[in-house]
Amino acid sequence: MRASTHNLFEEPLVPVRWTPGAAGPCPERVGLRELLLRSGDISAVAVSDPPAHAAILRILYALTARVTGLDVAGSGDWAERRLDILDAGQLPVDGIDAYVSRTWHRFFVFDPEGGRPWMQDARLAEQCDPDKSAGVNKLIVTRPAGNTHAWFRHGSDARPDRPTVADAVLNLLVWHYYGPSGRCSAREVNGVKTASASAGPLRTALSYHPEGANLLETLLAGLVEPPRAVRREDDLCPWEWDELPDPEALPSAPAGPCARLTACSQHALLLVPDADDPGRVADAFITWAYRSGRIPRDDDYLIWQISQQGNRYPRPADSRRALWRDLDALLLQEPTGTTQPKRPRVFEYAGEVCDYLRVRALGFEQEGQAKDIQFVDATTPPVLGFAEKRAEEEGHATAPAIGRLRQLGELYGRRLDRAIRRAWTQYTDDAKADADTWAFEAAARYWPGAELEFWDRFRQLGSPAGSEEADFDAGAARTAFLGLALAAYTSVTASVTRTQRGAKAVSQARIELFGGTRKKSKAPTAP
Image (cartoon, rainbow, N blue to C red):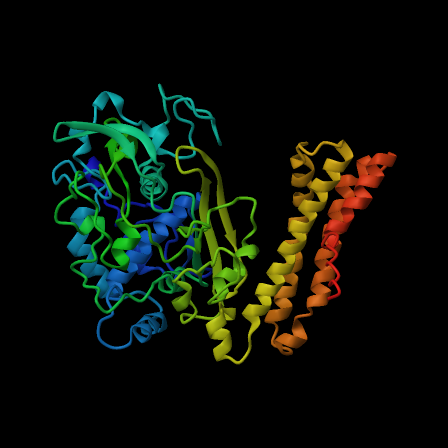
């Protein structure tokens, strides 16, 4: 088998789960062509690493838009055209065959003859020092490379385990979307050598994706209606470019949804095939894509917020924050909060596909530069039927009630944190004492219970019996969250209540759970 035979339309790249009763063979991994053709028989993409999952979904959204013609507004109603495809139960075979035939030559992982390997830059073989390649340990984000700490396994740069082509491609996508800023491998262009890259478009961010009962529903629900002005010949994916971009030129803004999904990388990569085993990758070059300037950061799957300085930024991935705490920001058109969050634009259209869509949150808790902390992957029950616009059309307002329920859960979480820290400070009689140990233990006890309480009350809101006013009892919810906070507080502070000083500190700080001591207002002075 020659390395150039690795075409991703046929290469078993994407791990999948099949629906019960799916006809025909059901392999664990499929190529992109089979995935599109059998999306109605596939339950979901089964990529285990959340950043790779988020990246491959964006590639699949772009391919789905192309093969269905939903990449442009076109003639007729865009939403109706999408529902017609859903009713057909599969993506159009003619559209898939036509697109595969037209772009087949651009989907080779290794392409020594044409010089255009998929999502790579073949120029790096000459522009980077061959003796200073990144190596496969650097390419695979879950491996330790150089002097970094091991995550899931130990490894050696001198004798690395060479990854399969499929694993290498998925990690190549992670670099395109989540790659760090700062120093990278040097790249020489027109006699000037530099080694500094900007962060990838999803670096530090948490993205939210609608999920249906099968992959067909998931892909159609993940599409966003393009503006009327978008032209297919301008809104190009990287594998559709006639020429690779000039690394010295300022990057241009995406011209439409397909480019925004796939063509915003700040990194350039090149995979090197294993000469002894064509099914594996032996090495990789990883460097910057543009010497100066940044592609404008925008994405239809992120919650966008406003900082105190007035800057727009995506809600960051936080492995300690449960997904239910973001739910009202996904369902409400104008969610509350000092950061003025805006829900992902995809949810303006997703609910039109079906009313039992779940939400999947995928991300990578990271710092802007090299430090990676933890993957984030969470899924809600079916919730998008309760989105504010859809709920109003059906004559009820469940989404605002969900927002109030979330606010109560977070209110008592904050009060618990204040109470715990105050108790520790008074017990140690040291204003600078670090109360993090107590605070982390209290949070670990409170938030899982609060999440169960939230979803239990959410199911009551979602039941058809009764109106919102009858279903949502703010007093009962407040009492429930307070009870969870009191239980966590009592458990964490129990060890110091055997002493008089400890008992006094715990007793005095408990008032923070009820809102703290109210400040007395000054009595009006007599005229």
